Length: 251
Length: 251
Image (cartoon, rainbow over all chains, first blue to last red; front, side, top):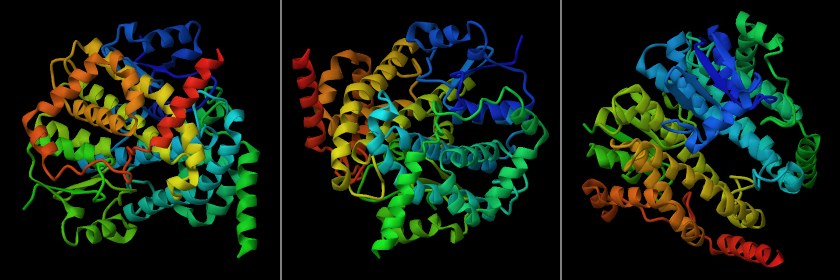
């Protein structure tokens, strides 16, 4: 029997990717259920209130381990990490790791809002005008703020990792945030890159970890695409850059 | 020396309120630092990367207990709760409580987005047109979905609390979510009220707990207002209701 069953939408990295990265780094025995035959049906069943769980998840991702079913990305990671050496044992480190994870999750949510600023039930095309505005504020204000905060955290900890000498799941999530933002907003990321040397170094170190490198090269890593959280819509970046150029001219 | 120092913006309930409710229910010895003389200055200092903390918070609320400084609402609560009997001791309950807390946090974030759908750095008045659209989707789609999920959780657990017979901090947060939504969107909440009898009962039970009742009647409870997360802007509800009536007519 498999140790872990991960339930997440097939075809996208999404929030499930933060859990996949932890499972891969741990070398854990897991199945990505919705990518197996019949798996989607099983996932949808468990999401229903009458699906038999003590507490149905609000949404994927969720992880099953024996009798336990855990939803909410940060909750899954905080539970999984101590079992696989993905967080130091002391209380201060665990609290710090979850604090970073939840801040990364906030950034991820805001990245999602750039293409869905009005209604998650509508298509991007139906809220594109507002998306352009939202993306402008996100790329100019929020990306530098979130990544600057991560950079500062590595600086205060002494690095090379977010918690200092000890690697943790927070580093995996910071890696994924940088990867996602680089895919979705390459121009904005180019602007910010010189101010985040420690975070860039961390990103490379994560990518070079043997299990992560093997995972990224495998077909288990779903490519980024425009159904996921990090979407590359040139219109969103063009508008943001154009607005900035215009503002500069107006000075 | 005080056991806990809570740092949060004075003058609003905001995300700090979820922590205040837990501290009050616990009967904990705490100071709401930013509401004391010089407190704001102290809070702003700790938020700076050079403020001397191992890991500066990204934003308030944060809690100091001795050497430990914890940020991110759900992280604070998950740390605080076991110390004060605000969550059962078994692993499944702790995981379930944090799962609920994080889902409530998602709903709170979406409530905030209704008045700031474009940019947190701009005023509501500068994004009012988009706010009207966002509020329509939130009141029609998301409020019923989030509250329906909480209702389902109480039903599956057997009630009267979210985890069943055991009270937890998740109940305090569900209470606060219902209070906030009732303040911000009274019309939408009236529409949904009949479908959430268990959640309404939970709300009343929390309000009647002696320490919570005393807190709500005290001046420590900041009144809801239009600087917080839950804001009552009649324009946002009017537009949502009007749109609904129009859609009904068009059938």
